[in-house]
Length: 297
Length: 336
Image 1: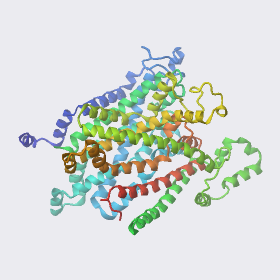
Image 2: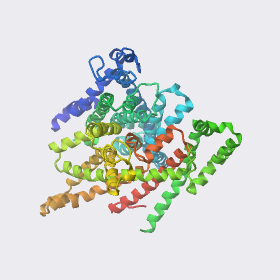
Image 3: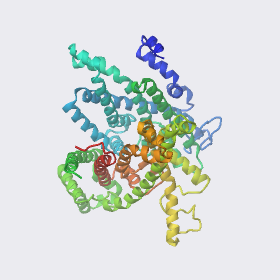
Image 4: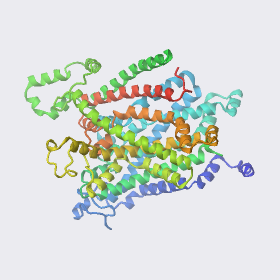
């Protein structure tokens, strides 16, 4: 066993990670699912038969149809083709998932690095600040904010309002995780050596600490994307989303209102959402096995 | 409790004050960013506009004739006197409304918590004991599905199956299930036993959904902590000394899983008042969460302010209690 490790030492950190990732069945399944959804999102205009939110099937006399060859997921009472809208919803899900996670991880990274590296007063202040965000009743605040901002800013921003709110309120837990990791890395010998050689804090943070927290960031990002997609679906389901963008939550809301006798919207869109979130969660698990240094044998 | 514990509690309570004021100002300002409360009241009852005297008295009633800082201080003073103001719709006191919803929410949450704990402790220990067995794999697979499944969607599926298809359980509300008790015309005609059974039947589906929502996380935490404990030497020693496996598992090993569990339950209690807005909405459960959603959609600012701040206070207090309980179950933890 030790022999093989010696041989592989020349490979880069990422090549090793990829090799480990390939061994994890769970991670590969996740990657595949996410890949399929990314494909659906990118080629949505070619896959979807109707425009987003179009009620064209109504004029074709196809409203409220159970799943059939022409409408694989059926149609709603107002005449929306559920399959087309579910395909368009993929774009919204990726926008919210990636956008909000990007903002959250950006904030978490800055705060986590600063708190962990500089310690003492800065650490205290920043972690108290993070605590405020952890104590807030997350979902309730998000509901109030999305309702109020939509009124204050107008519907012009659309889904971006949700992305911003989820991004700004979702960083605290991960900032703590990153801080913990930075605290550990800061005490490692090679960092101390670098410091003795007279390297500036900026150089140490960006050249040495950052690359070492990157694996953790990738793992939690994948899991946070899954959470954000779920939360957005819940917000839209409750009627707080952007009415002008087709999202899965919105479709589920419509399906729930007409649930008596119209089960197909709930089942198909729900499964679509479930599978997408599952993909990101599995990917995160696989990445965690491949990248998390503490779990390495 | 020693002096240091009281000092700790006092310090945390003092820390709560700026936090409370900060959050309440923030929410207060946000409410005003949403639009003039007067317009919302008028939208709810356009007749107000016809009578200027009435309009003035409405303004005075909600304190809208004063400046913004004055209005905030008025709100704060009322809150400290346990007066949450009046709902914009119909002008009923928020205290009364919240009082009625509060218990429905707490009931639902406690039932869900009891189910979650019982199930997750059993399943978590089972899967930790047989790591990498088929049971364990099944549990981990189900739990990753659990965290990936939207809570409201699970509720909808349960309604589709158990209410619409099988007709066993009511799909909404907390009382008066005509589907289950077809013979029952009104609530007034039912005997107390029938009412109780009826209420319990209403509880089943929503509490199942909430249990499912908690389960994945709880099982994960119990399983990983148990795995760690079971590798310890003292467990080996306990087994070697011939203790029955049950005793080893439940009294020796499980004792050490209590501290993370206490943190979880503490967090749960903090969230209890926040309710489960999503689950309550799906099942039309007459609780705090559902009414919060409705108040937010209707911009009923006194209700939003009241509920938000109650939740913030409860969360802060529950965090302190959780910290204290943590020290009680784990003697290694010292409060300083």
